[in-house]
Length: 165
Image (cartoon, rainbow, N blue to C red; front, side):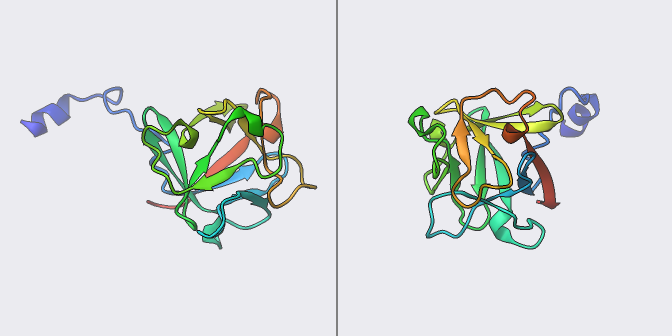
């Protein structure tokens, strides 16, 4: 009996992942105050720009659970963030978008963890964090870096709901 089972469940039995239930989100750097820009489908490089996620799909993302990790998908390009490999550390153009399927693909999977009240985004494949840099950097100058995110605002991000899923 489904109704009887539902009455017996406690909140601990019904774990809800806040990130995957947020619907469309903006992802904004705590250091540069710029947002990840998923661009249009014809582009592969992720940009970091001063756009407004509430007014443009370029700055909107969805977060999915995949293989116990997260996949982050651009609303505008319909591509996933690709963490690539560690050889891309501290390079312009390191953060990429791809149309591959994230299941079984560690390059498209991320660990998103709470750090200092914000979020850190770490690639499963490269082990690198997304670096929002500072306000002087634009376009493809968003980096992947191996620094630890604790106390490092460049590696911390605000993730906030744009609208319901």
